[in-house]
Image (cartoon, rainbow over all chains, first blue to last red; front, side, top):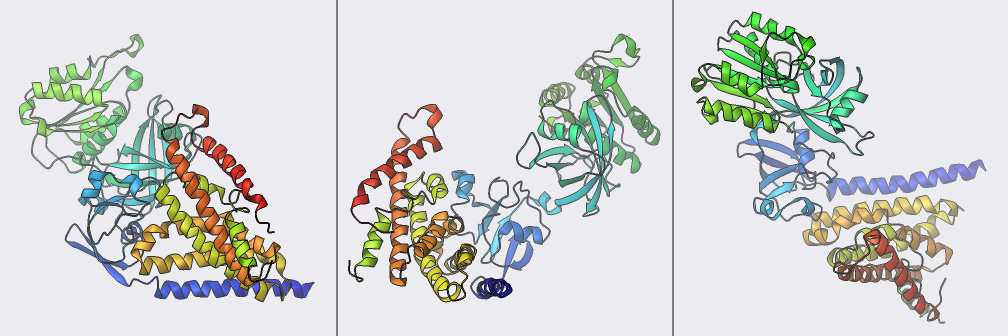
Amino acid sequence: MITTLIISVLIITAISALLALMMVIADATVGNYGEVSITINGDKNLTVRGGQPLLKALVSEGVFIPSACGGRGSCGLCKVKVVEGGGEYLPTELPWISDEEKEQKVRLSCQFKVKQDVSIQIPEELFNVRQFDTTVESIVDLTHDIKQVRLKLNDPGTIDCKAGQFIQFQVPEYELTDEEVYRAYSMASVPSDNTHIELEIRLVPNGICTTYVHKHLKEGDSVTVNGPYGDFFLRDTERDIICIAGGSGMAPIKSILLDMAEKKSTRKAMYFFGARSKRDLFLLDEMKDIEKNMPSFTFVPALSEPLEEDKWKGEVGLITDVVRRMSENATESEAYLCGSPGMIDACVKVLTELGMPEERIYYDKFA
Amino acid sequence: MSDMLFPLAVFFAAAFTNNILLTNYLGMCSFLSVSKEIETSAGLGIAVTFVMAVTTALNWVVYHLVLLPFGLEYLRFIVFIIVIAAFVQLIEMVIERYSEGLYFALGIFLPLITVNCAILGASLFMVIREYSFMTTFFFGIGSGLGWFLAIMAMAGIRQKLKTAKVPAGLEGPGIALIIAGFMAMAFMGFSGMIAIG
């Protein structure tokens, strides 16, 4: 009995070992493509082990390409332009590549294997993008439907971003989604606090990520995010600025204002915060603090439908009307807007009517 | 039947009367999911034929030279799977390295084949039916070609199906399964011709 057992274990081990040995030999000979170089955007040079997928090679060198499926070829997000050394398309790439992209030599980087020296093109901003393992440090109710989520960065431990940029939040599988999904949120935290990310997330009925954050996420949970992305950040000029944002659109504006206050900016700044009634207002104390630290800043909350019991003494009316009434010197200022497409379009219209050139209006539209 | 002719008879039987797909219903998942285009079906069919021919022969050697002498027949399931997986990996590496063209035609189907139950099925039939090495080799090729034939026929029918009016509830896998059933019945017509097994 014992001998049969020992023999069967030995035989299985021997067969597996023999096959494994063959695989190792094959990997070292047939599968060995030596070292190849990847040239990014014509100047940056990476030397990587050949034969591995481009996505993996880039990630191992610290260049993060957004991908939702983790390299299985099922999300079609990790597209990269391979200018030289691309070769033919793989059948596993074709479902994701349009004819137009074929002409531009766009490849799916998780499927395309680097077997020779290649030259690729990726957007500059991606050089700085990383994936972060984080822990939820706190979740605070800002209003009845907006939560402030503060994440502590674990690995990597710090983020290098500009005030106003956004990150992508990874939602794991749960009842509303059977695969991981990513949703973009602006960072509300000041860039100098580079070990934390703060998000302001408003509950959207049946929203995959917002429901997850509001109903499931707890303090101490792990969250994966990647970023930073986006060109919504304070331009380095001397102009006065006008900020307009309501609800969770406050996030990037708050980040910009905190950043300005910290840097002792003397630029004149006004922030128009539109809300329906008093229960939709939040972080008023923080705004007062910023006003205190930066004398050139004025916070203008405005209610469109104040209730009796609100006893509201501040500005009343649609935010566009308040902006039209109160903004000074619009022709020489620049504007930063964050909010829904409808609100942005209405504000852009008012600002251009006030004489602000459209190229000086920066906005972050979210659907 | 003479010994000389037996392998040939098995070859034809495996391809037609005992078609591994249509009489044993093995290798169904890739048969249903990859049969949408004739071109890809052909690629997969050729890959299956190749892998089946080589792995059944390989498994015959392992079974008769290693497992039988030690009285370890009951280990054949796990050993066959290991051999098939390792062989497919190996051949994929070789093809990827040395033949770009073949890799594009065949290579991407190889990982799919590791988990194709028809491949394991052929190895197990070879044991149950006590084939000699020569017969096993012909059986492997025949089974593979039979599978190839079945998926090509299916792909052809599905091509026609694109313009046909299919009741809404039967679209996709539903109608494909019904067609597979009809094809299996048609293949039953061959069953009187040669008998094996």
